[in-house]
Length: 156
Image 1 (cartoon, rainbow, N blue to C red):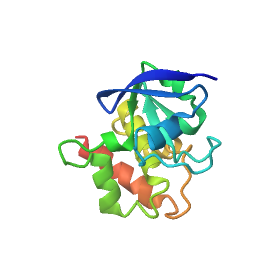
Image 2: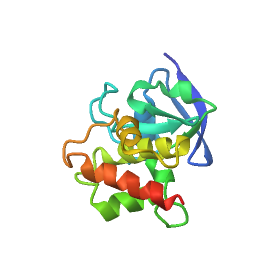
Image 3: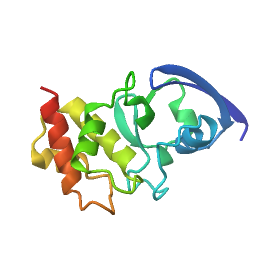
């Protein structure tokens, strides 16, 4: 397939790249745009490590052809902190010790962001359901759930 130019609003800034037709969004982020915060865990859409927010929806970037994102708004982990200040979710992850090896953390934070955008004060069950598409092999999840509960309390 021929290379295709795509334009996306990435973390608030318009970016244009030319990519092979079926290149994955994950690979464009990491290789072409040098944003390595989004991780590849399984490459099959099962683990959530590559989660990003595309036009307001949480998606697995390893399953999205980059050209499908043409004209879209995309938020990655790199766009969470503003003016040198961690987002409340990032801060809560740090304060509760929810981040361990770092492979799942960006995807978990993006899933948490998507959940809190839909429901600013989720119940413990809603938190578990909201993060169900993300696998962590280090923390046993409780610290992650605690972080999200803490972040939702910071929302006021």
